[in-house]
Length: 366
Ligand SMILES: NC(=O)c1ccc[n+]([C@@H]2O[C@H](COP(=O)([O-])OP(=O)(O)OC[C@H]3O[C@@H](n4cnc5c(N)ncnc54)[C@H](O)[C@@H]3O)[C@@H](O)[C@H]2O)c1
Ligand SMILES: [Zn+2]
Image (cartoon, protein in one colour):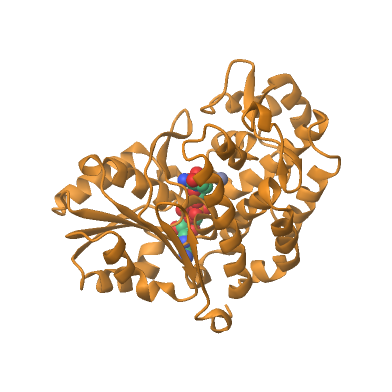
């Protein structure tokens, strides 16, 4: 990674009640920033068994000058984003003697962020937390916006809470150890931000794609910063998802259904990639999206080596069935946030999403 190029360059994005700080090398300041924005007696660092061994050591050492750091490690992967893990982590915090004067620190990808945030939202009826995202997807998307929670047998993210972080601290140098397939998956959410709000971002991602895939720090920093600006401005306008925030669900109604039905064999970002292409195609069929929108999305995703079609192991009926597990589904239809064109979403008049009959979705999936 050419981190030297961007050393010293940093971005701070005002996300409303908190800041998102992004730079190359920020990890050396994590502890002092955490101690400033969320001072506590106990700093409970939650991580997973892949990220912890790589990156937790220096943070634990640095936090020791500000309070009592404790380390809590969960197994990596979406399959562990469960109430069981939440119960184990909260028991673990109690056993470590953490009380009300605790700040939870999430050090990991979106799974760790969602779980640690849910621990923070519920532990002692709520303690502050700071997100230190380590995956591209978590930097670009999951760490911002205050949604926390776990999956259940019935579907994704069905139990959770809104809990705003005290800060989000992203060091793009931490991505040097991220496996490439997770880098690709993160790009899917960045591309989504381009589609829903900014054709310029979409074009820039397309141009810098080779560098982004190769781990170029300068283009990564720019892409993360622009995506965070988009996501945080959407969230600020509609924290509790009554309207505009629904646009962030583009690709996710079908994406979550595939993710759930595949038994989490596919990565979240991969499922969102497939979901975006199919939902854009659906939007074209319904006369909502400009012709060619789906094809443009498909082209950039293919260049990012992301999947764009329904996995053969899953039938169209099975996927449509699973869209009904979505929080917003009604019988015989599900809610979709659909694009009008690259950079602009449709259906503002109906609160940025519309109910689409299962039959229409089946046709696109078939
Ligand atoms: N709360 C939100 O608003 C929101 C938004 C988007 C996605 N999400 C959630 O985020 C999750 C997906 O996030 P993800 O893709 O980061 O998954 P993840 O947390 O499973 O991380 C992906 C993998 O990369 C590893 N990893 C992370 N950082 C690493 C690093 N620097 N070096 C080496 N390995 C590293 C992890 O251990 C894991 O194996 C899903 O559960 C999704 O629902 C939440
Ligand atoms: Zn997502």
